Image (cartoon, rainbow, N blue to C red; front, side, top):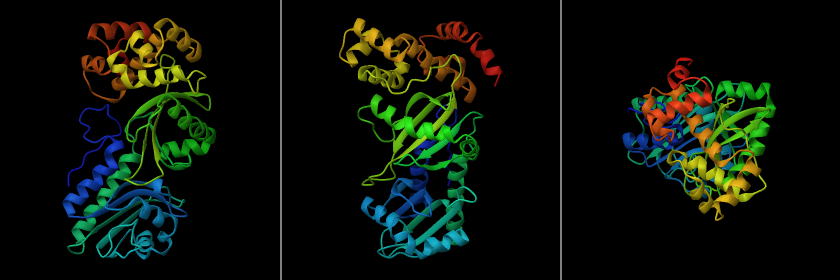
Length: 364
């Protein structure tokens, strides 16, 4: 099994960004092992929720909810795996994992998510043909360790990674961010309070697994928030929110939360999703069905920044991130950030940031 993942889209050589990693692991395990069922998640063993199941295959949503709400308490293999790290046996109609197909050979793996809490990383596999061999158990346990390490070791010095539940509770965070939440709980409280309302205002039809971004003020710190809403599988009614947190600098996009004008909010979402294409004032005004003059006045009033500068700072924010977190050539950074040419990018970057892109990269 040869799985590669990375914490973000930016770094060259990344094969699977984290938002695709859970399903990528279960897909590959199913192919390699001939499994017909797979569940991967981070569970609160005191009361797991269906939004804690990150990738589910071969199981129905209603059965996932049934297991989380009730059946896990009587799940002998789950209890054994919590004690020993791995357990094997035959499935029944209620076990051993979240609604894996009945009358199958199963393997269940549990690893602590945060020491001293009830949160655990969980992997369950099943197949009809035969029991899992020792080698297959070792490979599967290693796969769970890999996806856990992928989440917890962010690879960027200023990146925090967080999973929020459907009710905004903390499912999991990387160790450094978890420690920051303990020291400054208001950051987590602000994130939970602001993110979902702002996301629902800027994207009327918020699709699962689609990456978006906003800049929010979290406990007084402007913070660049990239996120997607996801669910483990079809029919699961509760969704989690995957979140990346990075500090926002003085030249980056200023924090803007909920705004009074819905058209301004939708335009901000549109710019965030299409900054690479450098949408102009006319295109933005048409998107929110108003005149360019009226749109410019509305946006500048409610966002406290002009549409042009909102777009430009969004592009520069991405460029600075790519310079910090990837090895892409400067010309490629300019293209991925939405600038028309290498020269235009360099001149704009120097004017706005005060140093050249190469000098900025050297600082990191």
